[in-house]
Length: 147
Ligand code: AMP
Image (cartoon, rainbow, N blue to C red; front, side, top):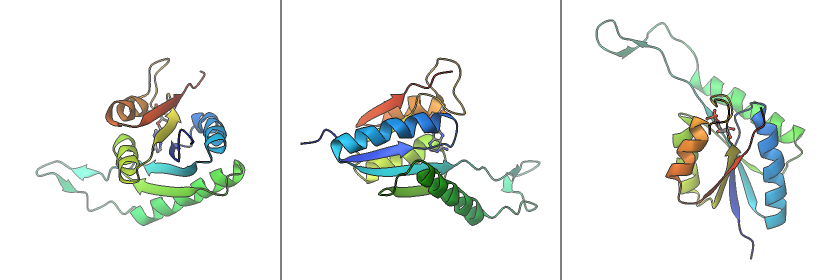
């Protein structure tokens, strides 16, 4: 029986994503595991805080459009890395929260991510990897990203 059957890969489109997907493909192949790629669109609508915190009325970014663009980027990423049989999931939110939520709700048994990506500092574990590692009950592989 394979060690892992349902693997979630966190893709942030940084340079780290290439190392992460290369490692994930090998592990998935060796385990004949199902692969899901998740990308979280980090977007905070601006808030007017002069008096009461309310959503700014001058802001007109279409959230559906943001998600649509991210889906296209994830599709392109899959094509470039020649991964056809994969689930793709794009959602707006906080990376750590959304990655953990998806993994829990879909009974993922391994989460693969970069040790750091866009928020990582030097040799420290990036904030997202650190958060997921401490929150998830399943295995988490933080692929070491070389500086
Ligand atoms: P960071 O916390 O930015 O150092 O990122 C560490 C790792 O978390 C990255 O290599 C990705 O695997 C994952 N990650 C960070 N941000 C996102 C995101 N917006 N969507 C999906 N995965 C992410």
